[in-house]
Image (cartoon, rainbow, N blue to C red):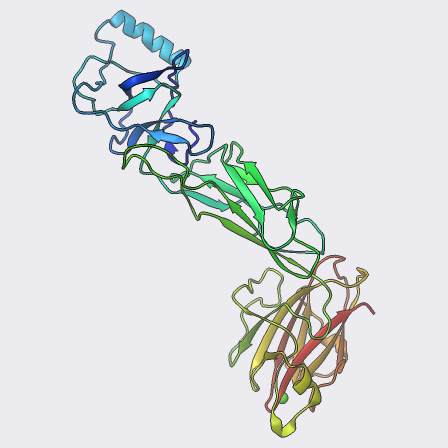
Length: 405
Ligand SMILES: [Ca+2]
């Protein structure tokens, strides 16, 4: 196939001269197709360079002297029969060509060229192609420090009409930090299924979010005559994978996703790992609001993110247990009520307090470690802490830590 993002008709023929020659003036070339393809968009094209996108769409032949598509069979039925046999043996379908008539018939495509090389028939109007995420590969992930993201980021490159395109060089480049295949970028050719897979993306050491961007070629297509010169294009022009390096949760930790609910019930499944919190805000603990009339020292000194009084707040954050044990102790400072979930499991009752509507309650100024919860069966890798907290007026406050017992 040609190295192009354009759709290519299934019948592909290679014409070449040996030795290769460049004509001193343009000659007319035509391919007549047996099926009724749309002549308005079908054009002859050939590669004029070794890189993906080095494709020339042939300028259309002038009205006079172009090739006509006629069936050779009537000329000689005997030759026609033999030709059909050859075609059935060696070609996907019959190839008709002639240089004797005045106009290109409606079942052919043609143009002028100065050089013979492998020609194909393309849909000149089929840009842009598509760039999508590989099946089963998440766009966002969580990893331990210095760990490799799994499954590896992969993208699929297809033509506008959905045909996977092989041999497309896709460049995977890391953003600020991390490495892919041991360096800052890696270029991978798409396979026969149009899939390019990066190898060994290590986002980084420090806790935080890192990106890897996959970009196929754009704008390299060559040619001489508009409008038969579409640029190579894929939409979107690139895809960005995000991976978050996860560490322990200490008081005052950054990197929480949070949602403030002035009223109403929390969204369904907010405590689950699979819940999509990407539309939530990002904040640093502690969350709170200081009411000057009952000012509390912890609220004044430790509040980093505003949480209005008399509202509910949901916070989510991945964490690791230092040492990788299977038990974690969640300590909180809270004003007023709290429910705690680890890996989707409600552990609120583990605090030993009387629960009201499923919440453990706390009145008066918040203090560190005022409530302690225990989570068991932790993953030695990445776990998820989710807190649902509500305030009953005055000041509000929420902070948490998770440690081994
Ligand atoms: Ca309060």
